[in-house]
Image 1 (cartoon, helix red, strand yellow):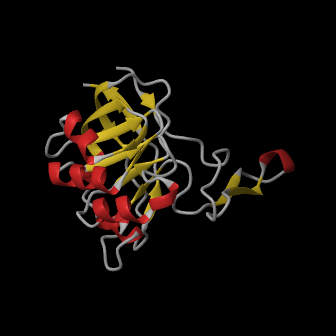
Image 2 (tube, one colour; image 1 turned 90 degrees about the vertical axis):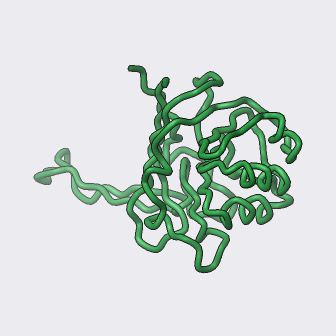
Length: 190
């Protein structure tokens, strides 16, 4: 079975404007005579490949540790699209209830596209962009999906993945009460 690592590297991925810059620190090093190698690191919860929970845009929404883990493991569909998608575009893609959709190719969702995905009953939406939303409307698409309890998997690396059906595993860290978490996301063929 071939696994596709669809995660971006945390320390080298450009950060979203205003987000903290990830950094690592060596606490002890065998090379310097310490008994072991030990590191610490700092990052924002939206660093590199990450999942947004409803709490990101919804006061009182579910935190990352409150989303059922089944949401992040299961069948998904990768599709290439570009530009700012509308609700009509989503209708033409024929999404199904419970489906996990990963967009590659530089697409962003308009509020109407997010509404259409929510109405279709998808359980997760992912993108190879740092955000699912265009710069001029960050809130609309996020609120439309997150208010329905649909988490967002952002910052994916899908360059080496063809369109089609896969199994997705993108488990968030168990970070109590936070609005997002970095993930290590992988795909394999169904």
